[in-house]
Length: 374
Image 1 (cartoon, rainbow, N blue to C red):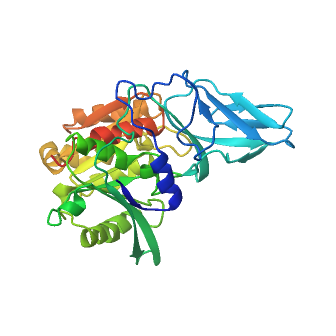
Image 2: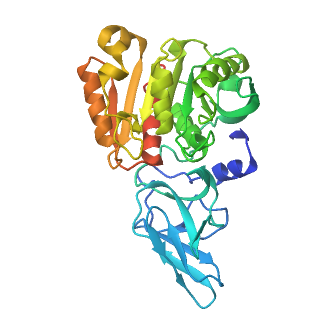
Image 3: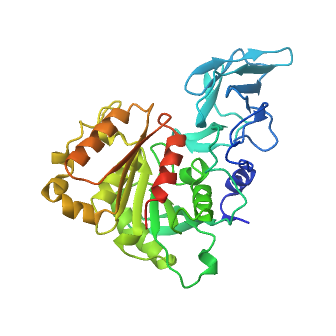
């Protein structure tokens, strides 16, 4: 049984989780079901076999109610003051959403709250047919610890979450590699365990013997000089506290979106600390939104690769890029991967179905973890 030293709401959410299904039937609905992301016991929102979602909100005094999950869907009021309505079919994966009552955006009391979009937000999980690698199975379960540590540079206590494989306590003399896994902008150190199910992904991979046993550390990346915090505070603390192999060959760094940029700017630039790098859906390759990065250039952003491709490849066991096919970052990422390969880098690039969302990031982690620490 999995042991969590986490806030009660996180434990309850993960315990509720998605029930085990055979891989060939995972995610296939034959009738409407409450979303797995609902507060336990709440009927709505419901997910239908065609992947539409039905919402219901009780607000008898309201003049208008709508649901915003990327597109705004007005709801209809009945005689008892219940507002209800359907979305269009939604992409499989995890979606933040908000209830809009008389023009005021708020969370849905039917949904568990997740820190995303810079606030505690409601969310709905839409299953994907045939995809079960992040669903609970009857396998040995690891442990996720909330680890507090003092940051001299911030003059404050910080926290990170540490995943330990199921065998960690059973092998007291064994040391483990570590993956430092970063969240996206507007999210925090809870994101990869709560929204991303990183612990479940690793438990399932380890049960299938498809990945090396490893620790995963998720730290908050949008505070202070994070490079200095990670390199000089977080990593030394993890190496003191846990049974790690404290060298570059046994450290990897990966992240999504904003965290993917950190994996590049910190992880890739410090081969003496990290030997494997994963960059998931980063906007750093150019052209996305206000203040977008300039188009990617190997000459300006990775001159060390041009100076010696062989030395660069020897220093990086795994160099991984990914992006959703529907993400506006996709073409910039694809072009960057091609430019890196042309310059001699051994880079692995995968484009996943989906947009700038958790489903491609879950799949990226699943693939990346099968490649590192071999």
